[in-house]
Amino acid sequence: MKKHLLLIYIIALTILFACKPEKPITKPFSLSSNTLIVGCEGNYTWGNASASLYFKTQDSIWNDAYYTINREKLGDVLQSMNFLNGKIFMVMNNSNRIIISDAKSFVKEHEIASLQSPRYIIDAMNGTYYVSDLYANAISIINQNSYEKVGSIPCIGWTEEMICVANKVYVCNRKSRFLYVVNTGNHSVEDSLDIGYGASAIIKDQHGKLWLTTTGNSTMGIAASLLCLNITDAHPIIERQFNFVSGASPRCLKVNSEGDQLYYVNTDVFNMSIEASSMPSTPFISASTTNIYGVEIDPSNGDVYVSDAKDYVQSGTIYRYNKAGQLQSQFDAGIIPSCFLFF
Image (cartoon, rainbow, N blue to C red):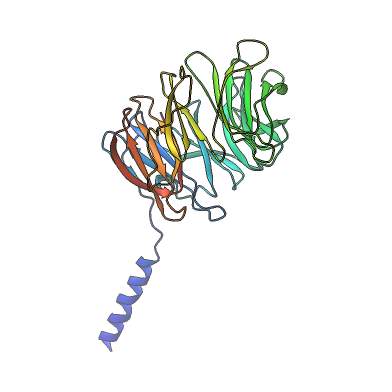
């Protein structure tokens, strides 16, 4: 009988400790210029987005670091990230919110909620942030102190990447022929430029000129393109235009820290000088058997990080190349790695 009681006692203790909540796991670290955040979209409606930390000097990856630190899932589809005013902003497209965390500990501090379908967030340089949106037909205006939505700017269509230059924000729109120009003083669209169709990504080069990629529209007979804009005059003008061949799908337009080299994805990764008179025909990095989904340039040394989304279900892989296009290392990340954030 005593043996039976002892067995029951052991089983009870085993169940008790097995059901004990897991304590948060912490690692001695501080986010710095040595750290890269890898944002992984996760699958739509699955709620499995994640954020990993890659420590460049150690060449080591801490996957799902945000969850480990905060014991809270990011949510559904991590669309983009930005580093603004000493905080990390993670835009959760299908969770209708933006998560704000501390830039050293990665601990969640705030949340911008009740957004419709946010895509990108930028500093509008006047005490507000602007948030583009897939479905809202407007750009949300967020107060930088309270993190509350204080207004919106009507802009019909799918607004995408934005860039702020002086007191103007240039807004890409995936479902329009136009690039929109917003006056940040009165939060209104004051100008537009016909860019073909479907502006998606936008950057600024070392001369202060803007470059953007467009998706084009086959039904309308408009080719996808890479455009260089001069914005020194009152109205922006197209200074150079490079058209892609039919069926091309350019995206992920990036620029190095010197502002003189462009990178974009069109199945492969291509590299192009801002002074070039034609687009490159040979890839900088060939996709080969990979599914290139995202790319970013390390501002400290020019290394090129490329994400492979594989089959969009299994964990993706990140490849790190030097500026000569030579593979330096690789590591696994979460599901559908898509965006990178350097400090």
